Length: 220
Ligand code: CTP
Image (cartoon, rainbow, N blue to C red; front, side, top):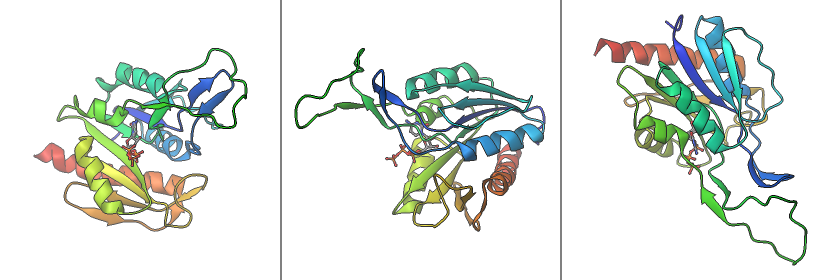
């Protein structure tokens, strides 16, 4: 099913600079997004991986990597590819906010307290979701600590996604910094829970689930 399909994947964290040496970021390693990119490439897809800063390497000939730093850069790179991609997978942990100003030289310490004003970043999945065609399929991720299913369903609707891969931080071995993940897949009419698995195995489960839902949509 994925052979010959064009796939856009976002992965990793974004870094939002405060000055030339400091940034606001998060602990995402990019492992889940990279595992999906590799698995899709192995299944014959043409993958465009827009990646925030990670230590990971991607050398598959079917994966074209665009390295980015900030959410704005990630959005700009996605816009170049989104129209022609059949499948969008938003696996990046995009920083929700960025400093309202970036100092051009290193901020020196002076007062006992220091306040940073933050402004909202673009929501890449939601912005692209507004222009999604019916022949395109979009997958988002949700990392939640409470009211997990309710929050995942809200994201599904708000971002015009076809499927949300939910990670609960309450599950040991799930989320950032692990080679394993425990997911629940939330679709408009179904919820499917999976056991704790390696991220490579989870990638296969996610792709099987995409196949099933996408095939249903195509029959409609
Ligand atoms: N996402 C995105 N751009 C953002 C924030 C999130 O593309 N600026 C995508 C993520 O890649 C993920 C989904 O939206 O697929 C949900 O991300 P998450 O951080 O869980 O949700 P938020 O919408 O940021 O909501 P909150 O942080 O309030 O839970």
